[in-house]
Image (tube, one colour):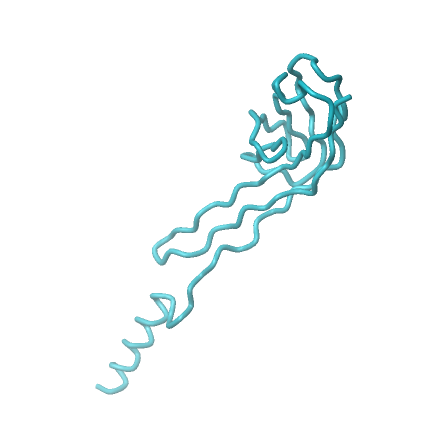
Length: 128
């Protein structure tokens, strides 16, 4: 009887994740920007499509312009396009462009898991 009780307790602990085994999200895939096309624009110009070349872009990756998400289309795991509104290039200066691979929550019968949000290197876009 004692062995059965111990086995039941072990099964319960292992099946529920054990004591203190909170599962935190695993690192996500870190995207990388290699080039922007175009890499500059004239201030006061019209809206345009920015092509971001690089790698490790998830299907739901988002291009950020100075930290603000832009409408993004996933072309391949190595290329994204984003619509950059004319208001973003109204004045001369620079903009920081990054790509974010959003994290995904875990799940399953015991919870936990999932992946963290990861952000690429920053590339500077010049507005002349």
